[in-house]
Amino acid sequence: MKVRIFVTLKDGVLDPQGKAIHHALESLDFSGVNDVRAGKLIELDVDPSVSREEIDRMCDKLLANTVIENYEIELPETASGTVS
Amino acid sequence: MQSAVIVFPGSNCDRDMAVALETVSGKKPHMVWHGDSELPAGLDVIAIPGGFSYGDYLRSGAMASRSNIIKPVVEAARRGVRILGVCNGFQILTETGLLPGALMRNSDIHFVCKDADLDVTNNDTIFTSGYTKNAAISIPVAHHDGNFFADKDTLDRLESENRVAFRYRSDINGSSRNIAGIINEAGNVLGMMPHPERAIDQKHGGTDGLPLFESLLR
Image (cartoon, rainbow over all chains, first blue to last red; front, side, top):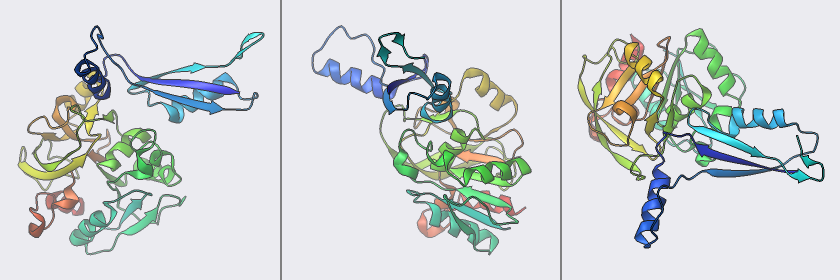
């Protein structure tokens, strides 16, 4: 199954990349953008036997640095709802 | 003083580090490959050099800090072996949790490569005893991710416990409180972004890095 993990910088952590993107949008004359935060999307293709807890552990141990980053795990929708 | 330099794929300051260690100690350091699971016996100092280990994939230092050799390095740190992490080595030490905080992209996005003016904030450490207190020194920096970040409580603790070893004299990368190098609670692990191993020979522009390596001999 395909699992998507969104890694984003925590609130209050300066995001120089997001700032540069924001600046570039303004220089392209797009207005009304109040803030830009850049993050990462990591896609895992895992066996259905892999538990949500196991994926949490992957995030804590490697995929995110929880000193500066948050992560969200998106599991695939199935007929019976979200796999857990 | 018996030392080792850990070599990762993408390390590029490992040989400079070895030259610096050999210059002060007269002994050739062991060069230890990241895939090894054991360190040579009897080490006094382990250096984690600068570079771009694993191409900085995922985050700077993230992959290196999960490589085979890191487990025995962490165990050695707990036993009191002196660990010096420079630049990418500092990033690796924060990723392993041996040092607090994280090194983020420089606040102005640019790679910074120049001689940086530093203050020796704490000369009462095993790494800095060769400097006078508040000495003003010049050490080269070369990094993209040198912006030291930690939450306020961690920063306050680092300062109150005198664990800030070096500070930039002006803001060059956005680091919290201009922190350039910190030590761990036990005082045997130092991480710093500037490269003391590039400042040990007058022919290379200066010798302000030499006292750091000489301190290790004391």
